Image (tube, rainbow, N blue to C red; front, side, top):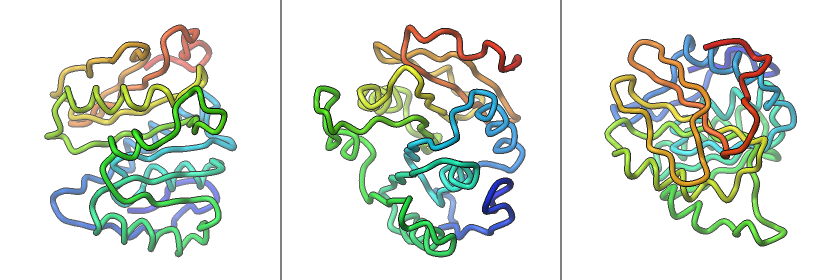
Length: 201
């Protein structure tokens, strides 16, 4: 695991290892971040990395200009890796690790009617492939109040999985497959087509 571009390019990341962690390949990561660069979402972004594992996506975003990253994972091995990587990169002032269930974490965030509610510009969701579509949809539903019309959610799933079922208020605006991996870009409904000017899939 390494950061492939930006301020921390080439930095090696600690990984919890084992069969429960599935790091995003460099090929997928390069294509994904090229698309995110096209959308202009990375500079000064407030990022949420759910099911973070070793945090490869969140740390890549930080290297490319994100301002703040919150990592969420229930695995203690992942949490140890995340904390080790934060220390190695020296970004403890702009990265936070939250230990526990993703749904519980989202449920504990303040609601949209609260002026202190957390709004995320970019969200990475890389849940275990065995996690069912209903569970994925439930997480997205809990996440929706913490997005605005410029926010982008990146959902990584197995290419053989069906297109994710969107809860009310969210829509998939772009999908792309890389071998066994599928990436779905999600936003609040009503946003003008985010692909305009960003090239085709």
